[in-house]
Length: 370
Length: 253
Image 1 (cartoon, rainbow over the protein chains, first blue to last red):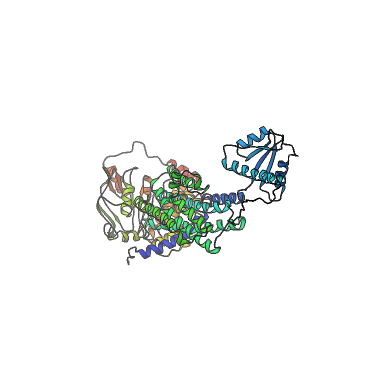
Image 2: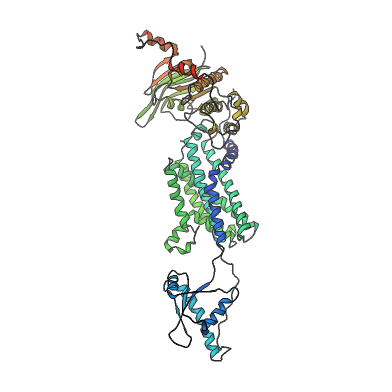
């Protein structure tokens, strides 16, 4: 009987590609696997899409003690009744309105002033200086113009002209969708690969491989490869739904889609090392999900996936912006919405690579078949 | 005398201070069914896994089909089929796909349907492993050991957890494989299984072989040493009653 040749790199590659096909078949049949990595992020994309964009309106309460014939009130009402007016007047009793003011639901309350000249009092809250300034400057503009007109001045000597530069409107879908793609990559890498590896160990599939021509690590690589391909397909579907249903911004059209797919592939490759590492360290059914959540949750909270990192204290931003999930989220967002090209995103790619190298070295050192 | 296909000499396996296998020597002849008997924790599985190339040995020598384990483990891998105790298979794949996957791992073509037919599983070809009955699972597991057309097949407690009918069926299947010229090495702690199935056996306890021979020979030795059963020999056992009432045919959905 002629002996088979010893396993070589080429034969492992051939075996690995063969096994990848079967790993893909299996993972596409695993319905439960879709939930965390696909249905979940997709649901959030839909929520972000339905949120539309933040309304730029000024809501001012009007006291029921204010008489309709008050000239200032009339002028304000006229502005509020214009089409597409950003001003919204909310009538009510003063007690009622003050409660809403303290909850920051309105910017101020208009009430009659003590004098008889028709002046008004603006009640504002110290809790929100921004909306207070907006309400104040708007009302001051109205009263100033009325005063000038009353004094017979129709063409003021000094004026401020304001001009607007056409900017991109902030929309929740543009913020949310890249974050959800990144989140989906993280889930696939940790929950997807980590749990299957755990099962392959428990059912002795990896151990059984030791008695074949294939090295067990080849099956792990095949698994990672199949998950990465699955990840690219999922990303494409999420982008497709985002564009079709919610008009997600693609700075350079199809080219941007391609760039996002490449970034996702890069991202999941960086995360996969952690999926393998976590399943190497956490060996039983109870500790593995805990370990994965410990790795995933802080990243999801700190990487600007669900809310902007700007709203966190600076020291926390410092930490958050260097997490692998933040590198992927930010680079996806910059590619899609700001139109950054892949080469310009090199610091993020370098950051992900650094995290990946650490993971792969540790994962290789802790890997066992049982 | 038939040639020896496995030679194990002074095999020792230590885990730290614990000696799991303590200087075991035995030989397996080509074409026989050889049993390793012993209570749980005696070192049967460890011995098997060392010969199967899955575990490194501490000291000793193992030769399988002329190849020394120390120098030519890959040659041994290509010549043996193994069934691990309580093992499973890659999830979400059907039986045909699993066999094809083994073919890829051995780098050789397989005929999945032919193998499945041989083990009476052709109707389950499209089913995933976890939908099979206990007996079907064991038969499929045996089918996977033949993917690389091995000279020796190792079975670690193949009949554990099976009902009497499935166990009797499994014995027939194992004898079938053996009749094709494949040497079988199995572990068991069922004495009836050892007696019915094995041509020769070794009894292991606490990492040492305490007896070796044919089942009949070992019984003869014991009787000659003056041993007598305390109870009189009954004309039938409870197992006989059970099989008489429920039949010997295999129960499978």
